[in-house]
Image (cartoon, rainbow, N blue to C red):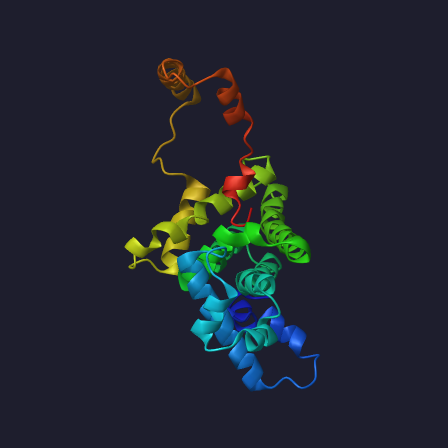
Length: 271
């Protein structure tokens, strides 16, 4: 599939049906007005959750903002948990569709990674409230919603890992640990939404190019020799160890806890 075909066949989030709409197509008696109203309720919930948090927003708050009584509200959303799951689907489903299409493109590894970066950043830049809820409130998902969310996350990460594995097979990568490489790629993108408000000049393609240049090439104009770096590191680590030893609460137990902390929880867009 050529790159230009990819952008024709993969719809952006604004043009894609939500998970609820897809399921609703099999149900009789639901009209366009129903689905329009349902989308409006989800929009209202995104705004409230992003301002007050999931736990700090009650069903009554959502109903009042949407102009619906409690009974009517449940008719459109089913439950507050289902509503949160729909918000996550608005971010996750387009990412899955696009990442699957990108991974299967007949183009180079660098191009596919660049497109994966653009796909992820498109969601972050264009759906900032959704991404805030997505990143902060996923732990509130319970039962089948949490299980499905994790499955989708794993599939998305798998598409990135697949492209990296292709690069490894072609001898293009120096790194051998594909899991850490995948997490490093995600970690370049994940917290963009937290500082994006101060850089309204940035566009998806520009920021993806910046991130991927760092990911592919690093930031040094000329890498230093390993021996020189090791000497400097030894000196710097010794200074840091001395500073940490002087801290009154820096016990061996706390040091050990830091050492065993998994990098995955902070690196994943959706941990």
